[in-house]
Amino acid sequence: MKTSNENILLIAEEAGVSLLANWTSRPLWVGNTVNYAIQAVYTGTPNGTFRLQGCNDEGQISAMALSVVDDGLVNWSNIDESAIVVIAAGNLLYNAQDVGYRWVRLAWTDTSSSNPSTLTVCRFNGKGS
Image 1 (cartoon, rainbow, N blue to C red):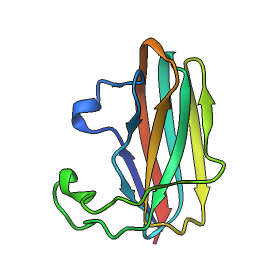
Image 2 (spheres, rainbow, N blue to C red; image 1 turned 30 degrees about the horizontal axis):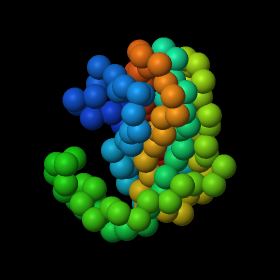
Image 3 (cartoon, rainbow, N blue to C red; image 1 turned 45 degrees about the vertical axis):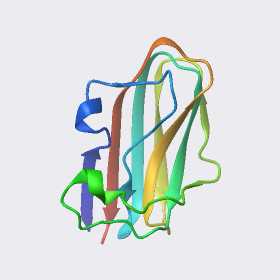
Image 4 (spheres, one colour; image 1 turned 90 degrees about the vertical axis):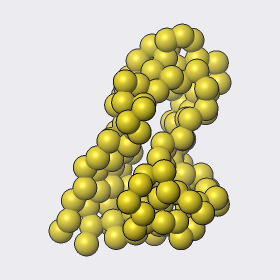
């Protein structure tokens, strides 16, 4: 069984992502993934909602540059029952099994966060064929 463990944050975001505005992670291809987990750690006083979004568009999985991988990914849908409301510093862990979609990403919708509110860690761990 193949495994994958990677940072979802882009290089420019590795010092942390402000949660004072809406944000989405880079998309992750889960086409051969059976199970995956996404963990997020956040500090400060965030006030909003994290949720997973899935997409079945083709994308550019073989692209060498991350900036090209998501070309053509436009039809994102919220994954049922993945919304987690956050009102204080903490962490969360999603654990998905038997996934049927091709792409996944983590989305943050800000309600009224206070400065500073920062996403400091966002990691993906997948298992599949």
